[in-house]
Image (cartoon, rainbow, N blue to C red; front, side, top):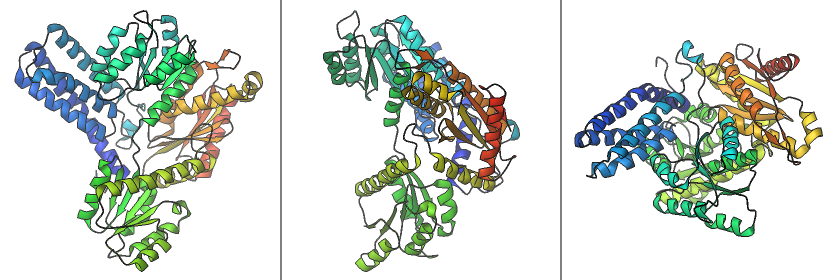
Length: 548
């Protein structure tokens, strides 16, 4: 790049761009080597090369945010390993393995490589991809219900694989590990065959797969059996698919890495790299800053959940730097921890008075450092969620989404990048509450919130602006691209069958408006422009997207 990359986000985007650019050739190396093995199953050299390619892919894909590709490469590597060690292939095994590998990587290239906006104008205008869908295995003999559940889950962006027989589940799990299994508790093979099969898979699988049981029975004994089989959810038939989706989302969120954002400020590059490596090993996102004069820019771009700094630095002291941070109302609650060899209690007290939350004396064991930082970051995240999140949907609330937009506009201005804002309003929402009741209305709000989170990129920011109105910030995206993406979400949402307490089903639509920085560089004005575009959609007859 011609411009100097001066923020972590830009560096990550640049690295991700390089990974995406090279991904097709890396996959081609895997599939070409696999073809050599298919032609000569005893080709040990080809298997060694294949194993190396898969091992490299397993490590690199997750690093750049493509966890599903990394996990699947690791699964393919595990299947290959016994044959690399001498176990012969049967023709059926090799053909099945070849088909699985080729099918998956064809799928990954189509769905898990999204354009990196900002590289070229032509790239910005491409449709925005949302990554590989999360995989659900649906195991039940009730084909009619399987079809209904599949259609609904696919509207939410999941990939669903249906199975009618228990015998196919273990083989499928070995070849491609799902994110969640939804399974009938009882099968004709035995009274509790579904639970027994999950128990057997759990014994042979290194990682437990989240499982949701469904059953015609609502008895205590059935529910207890599901609990003893490590079930993460239990639904009686006919299954409320919206409620099932809520449970699946909650399960997947609980299994995500914490990924606390930690900013380390120290003029000693070697020491900061050491502590950064310790915290990264614990799954945290770490930004190393050796120049304290860049603190305000980094605080804005990286948005740390905890700051770890030394007391003594050449440009200014840690105490002075903490006071600079505390001068900004946006950062008064961000935890600041001093990490220093200073043992003078009076100087430690001065640091705390300046706004620090803790003082850790060097040397410190890696385990203590990880525990101390993660506990403080967790408390900060929890408190921020109470302050910034809407209680019903879990999205950013009105105040928080406005703050996020102002911050994103500032960053887009520094980077010369596009940014779009969408306003969304549910159609005829008062009538839904009056007809089906407020609990059904709340369910509709949660459903739309969940669909937006699943269908959009991780970098897109979603908030509940108020009532039945939502806002979405699309970084690095023009209004035309954002409008097309939002229209796809609109179509999917309108197909979802909502459930009322009386057992009825109904569908809901929404109207939206999109604007970008071409309309205004002021956050409040941009909200007004996008809101006006949304009302234009209402005037057109609702259930459409308008661009300012």
